[in-house]
Length: 125
Image (cartoon, rainbow, N blue to C red; front, side):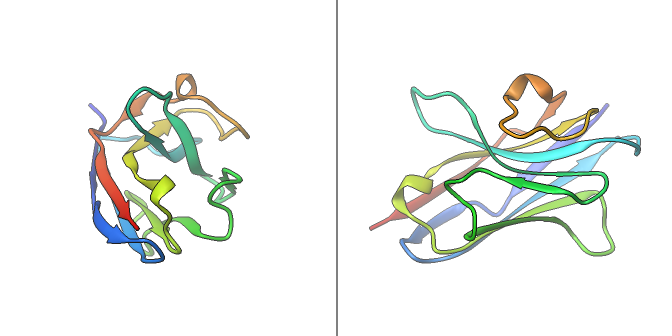
C-alpha cells in the first residue's frame, strides 16, 4: 500500500518562501513520476511541478523560476518543493502525487495513481 504524507505548508507573506515535503512509503521503485499539484476551491487540481525517475523536471509556467522540485539528497522516498517569491495566487492546497508512468507536460491528475492528503499554503499581501 503506497502512502504519501505531505508536510511544510503554512502561512507566509508575499515574497516569502516555504518548503513542502512529501514522504512516500510502500512504493516499489522503477519508472515513475512524482509531482506536486495544487487546488483552490471551485477550481480543478493543477500540476505545479513534476520529476521523473531520471530526474527530469517539468514546471508550470506560473511557477518557473520561483519553485524547485527535487528529491531529498540521500533519501529518494522524500519529494521536496522549494517555493520562493511567493504570491497570493500561490495560495492553495498542495498535493503530492505519484504515477507509474513518466511525467508528461501539462499532465492532468488522471495520470497519477497515488495521492497525499494535502497541505495548505496561504500567501498574504
